[in-house]
Length: 439
Image (tube, rainbow, N blue to C red; front, side, top):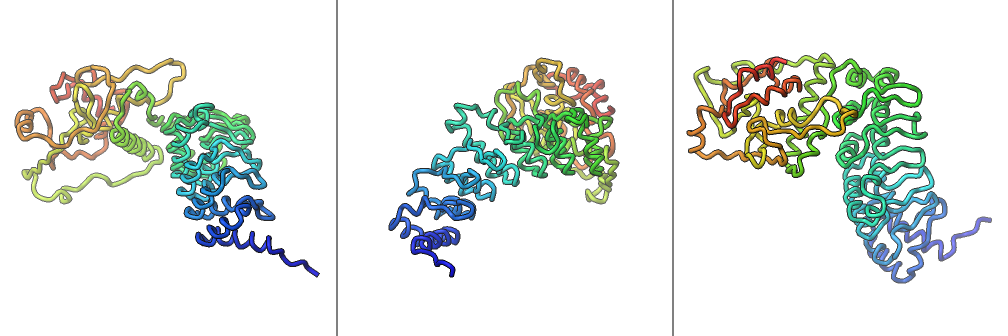
């Protein structure tokens, strides 16, 4: 004959059911009546009530338990913490509450030797990933390990969080990690194939978005894994043709971010966002050429409406370098303005040069002073200024559209030398600068 559950076991099961379903009043009453229940674990997974609440996203129940429990890092049978389970399931509110309660972000499990950072990256929860990274700036872990070391921490098989995100095709997580200082070309230990970089793993998974992000942050297309394969060969083997086209060593190098911008000691967040958007747009143009994609992007005259003599002027100033994009970036303290695309042409490069110890500080193309600060340009233009500079500052009109081939100011960075021939504040581009559009 089978043995029935004891009163204690029934009470424990009732607690776990109440926690899982979010019955906060029941949990409070049971915890007040018998505080020892909070340390009880399930039979098989050895999960505590904190684990169950974190995994199921029961933030109110979790808060009640944390107020009554002194240890937010209680372990299950795989030495996983409630924070790991919250990050695994993408329960951002639970992650925040556990971090607030002092949960240790540097604990490793015994399953794969991973931290909460690895779990968030592997399962694609970029918001949880960002919160964990933000907390690392102020936790004791950051002071003992250092933030950069934490971002690039490896699991038991030698994989960083970036490796896991790239292999799982988690583009947003890849972007968050790269912008936080993750090493784009770090090699794995025993994870996947030895010596693989995040670019190898993205190529294996066929994630064009991840490949694009990694290349934009300087990942090396020529780096080989332990078997001597470059990422291009991995993409070809797994028949990911689009990834292979971008990874082909013979294809044009993409622009990389941020490189020379490290010399700019104060980069306005809004300005950074504009530059990142411009970088993505510039690389997508290269991708279209590489992938032999054709698009009918030239607008027809009928799409503008009106006649050729009909002009429409707005308050947007056109960039005096490319005469195509609106001025969105202002250089301080000289206050000269240009578009984000031309700013990138000054500050980015085609391929990281490991031989060079340092890159040159970018200079303002108008006055040749070092660029130390970028902010978003003001869009409002004073009427008197419009009249005063109407002859030198081009305006966006219906005749100013030039979307045909060869119009891109980002065709090549080899034309950067022409910036030096710009007049100081003249608002015009010299004849020699025509090569900027012809290359």
